[in-house]
Length: 540
Ligand code: C2E
Ligand code: CA
Ligand code: CA
Image (cartoon, rainbow, N blue to C red; front, side, top):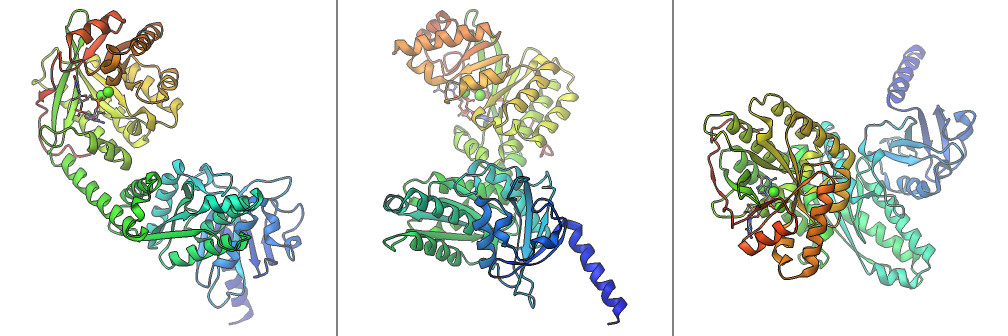
């Protein structure tokens, strides 16, 4: 190569480097920075070259120093990591994104790139993190996992999901100082993050963790590292037992479905307090879980897109006049079988919005057609999860924009409001729906712990009081008092009340007495067939 060619090559590679990063560092195995180039503002007031000779761990906030050490120790030749978010040290601390690799043939140093403007996009930047481990909290893991999967697919990188379960952590914590226990949590976070792909490392509960990582990272290497850290910190040198299980994410699944199946599996793992999943080893359990989830998702999708659904309608009546006010639409996957299990599953995997979308379109087409009795008004169930999805809501408004029948004939019942994270945003959607002229009902009021919080945040036309109150109202005075309070509170808020699961005349009379406006239940009518046209081609 001539001198000019060499310079040209150098410029070319520099340009590539700076395309995605502001600062380039080479770090030796002792943590010393050997080379630095670019904009160093988050780390030093002067030049990047000032960073040379300093420890890379000193550049980042104390909580991320361990992470840097573990990255140096764990990234081997040919491996890449990141981008992950770290906090810079010092007065001008800010979030920066770090990525890195050990280049084969140049593996004596770990090459790091920092991008200073933490791009606003990545879920890993905005994710809520556990303060002890620095790992992503369970609620935000799905978003991060989805992005990680998408970027893995784009880069044709095969990745795995690994779950870790710690045993004997309490004994460990009781025989070491608080500081040491904290140190172990910090190390746990650093080890898991340094092994993860695109920083997809989450805490799923006490001693339960999940990460996505490259196929060539062995789960045993990670468990060994974690176990080693616990032994080194333990005065008795016993450490804790760590079980790890891992499964390859099926490349045939779409990134969206894979993320949903994965999160469903991880949630099962997180809520499995009795260690049932570990009976046959975590790997086997995770494998089974993911496979079953994937198969169930396909079956569910098949059921909803191939016209296999049937629908029932159940009247909601005015308790005073007994006149039918509207009907609730209830779906059936199989005849005479409650859809409860299927619906819970769909909510767990996010498939619910596909179902909600189909039912919305069916209801609109039914109400637009001649089959519909001109007096029929329908309420369809919409999961809080769907309401939180921009895809669902934009479809919702698109479908609603073309409505030609009286808008009061189509109501929405918001079920599983517990899934709504951003109540302010949900309320905006609800108000937009109401402004169009559709009424909105908050379902299952009183079933969850936060019902009053929902009522406070969401302005609705109706609340539907959970059947549990109705069943006990006659037996327990306290329950009746509560119902009366809810009825009067709702009236003050200009919201009407519906009581569900009314089976006897006594219940109906008592609820009317307590000030409830409307009722639903076997007393007034069992769910009966509703003939939504079953034409094909309504798949989402
Ligand atoms: P939900 O919205 O609370 O619906 C009321 C449930 O109570 C229905 O069960 C209904 O059949 C049942 N029910 C009605 N009257 C009585 C009564 O007097 N006594 C008793 N014991 N039960 C009564 P179903 O149809 O099995 O639905 C279960 C849940 O599945 C629903 O609870 C709702 O959360 C969900 N679901 C049903 N259809 C849909 C749908 O189309 N979309 C969505 N997202 N969820 C649905
Ligand atoms: Ca309902
Ligand atoms: Ca309900």
